[in-house]
Length: 549
Ligand code: XUL
Image (cartoon, rainbow, N blue to C red; front, side):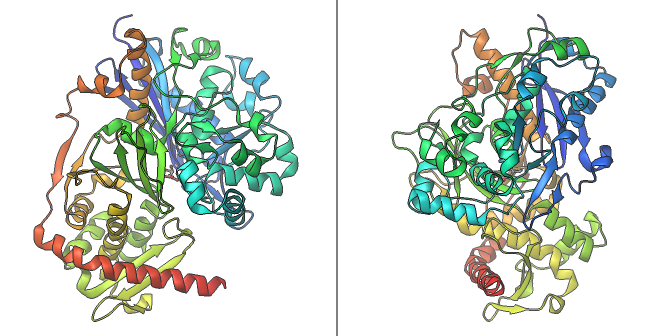
């Protein structure tokens, strides 16, 4: 076939994106669906619904099915020739879980091309109509139980790459088993968002990929196999069968597309479906820069470091995550993840900058570096780092770090304050997550919505003291398309070749652009603010602990 195309789908918190790349890896098409705007009947806010129980955050699974149909319509209307697509992969927001009913396999395998996905699969293919997502923080109790059962947070981190986190799927399953026992009993299989997505294309439930499986507290991160003790602790003896086969590596197709897609949309029956991965891992894939730091400024803020294979496996910490790499055996991704990213910045923009980014940027630029001794920490949602703090906290930093009421901080100081505190939090932790023998970081690659904002780019360059680069704006979705292309490329090469070899043939220059240089004097101010930031953060942790005690 001439001119093959590869489809990458990105199911994030707030929407679904589709991109196509050609055989040379060049992006040729983009479409998107925004859940709140395009599917308003589900009544989500930023793609999710809070409650009913405290800390619960879910998304309706049926909304995701509707989004699949809508994005196909949009691609067709834009003139996409589906028959040229030879591979599909993609990514989903990490940790979210879908609970399939005992009828799911039958319904998936017998999809009728004359009808939309949602009307055939929802509600009957699911034992829970709502999928818990990564913003959920209802499982603190289950986290402590799991750590205790396994021998403490460090033992769990050494085994799975992370201590127990509320959003990690094992802890979510553990709570669903107790809070909704009937639904758990009626569940035949549990998928991650990233394995739910290819299941729809395959017409059968797909395995979880090795990299996204690292976000569950259920897999041994070194062997990439499920761990029986963890399965048993989170979901009882029945979880082994509910979780499905061992996690799948990237670079190999799982199977061919189901006839539903051939008949309904005109896909080629030869189109292969590769494992999908998590959104953060797909961002690493898209930017593919071992040794660089990637800062993804999406709904969540994540710092990602790609760690190449080495003699000894990297150390696991209780303050960050270690994920298996989606394409390279024995390589890893180290990650920090903050829940209060873009939505917290938007909240400050709305409260203090007239709902306007231009005004927000003006305010940031008017204020001096270091914000004249004001610091502000903003956690509208219960945070991950540091755990479970919530609220807005303002401080003066000189002569010493002292809390002040939010109203005592000049209104014009908040815009700069949120950028400085979000970045100082990462800077204060960066050395701890670098492998001890790693070369110093040279470049900071920004992705996600806020990476388009020049004021935010410059603040990142100054706080981190690194040159800032940006790549194409479809970070994660493009990574998904590259995963599909990788599986096809390896098949063409008789099953040989690494992802890096495939990417080495693509021109990096065109993809990566330097957009901000650090200023040495400003960087020195920030170096001096790391300790005050730590003191402020410690005070926030103490204040929140006192409130809940
Ligand atoms: C990572 C995390 C978020 C989600 C949504 O651990 O929870 O970054 O992947 O983007």
